[in-house]
Length: 115
Length: 114
Image (cartoon, rainbow over the protein chains, first blue to last red):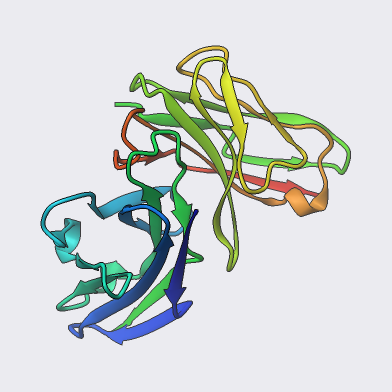
């Protein structure tokens, strides 16, 4: 079974500041890990994902995340926040080699960016 | 590129009414699923399907039915709507065979039950 915990339901940063959104997972099998972004009144868009290979994953819009197995973490970062990054972000996990496995989501983190 | 298409986008129902949320995808994806999104709860899986004729329950299936007669379509039926089913519903699909494949989401259906 898999589960995801996102630490902090709301994160506020200033424009140009570092963005750090935290995600810890629990999985009984090696995980696949995802970050999705949701803008108001829209569906979810994939930011990045970790499947296998390099543990530092780069995504769209300047975001990246690092898979740390020892810490069971997959935190999302961006060096410099932009106003357009304001949105809700979801971390999700599924199980490797579990073809029918659904994506299990965290409860989300709302990112606010102030000027 | 239509992707995953959901209809209707907005719907208001009275308690006890039934309705069907439609979902269609044009990517020939075997795997399809329905989630509901509620404030502070993230997305919770209602039902999913790994191919035509095959469906299974997710985390919160009560009050909902699904069927999968074709690869393209995966409708979600509310049998007797309740205020607790007021939510935003998302349909999603991905290629089968590898749970690391990207899941693609529809734009959502906003449902209010009064």
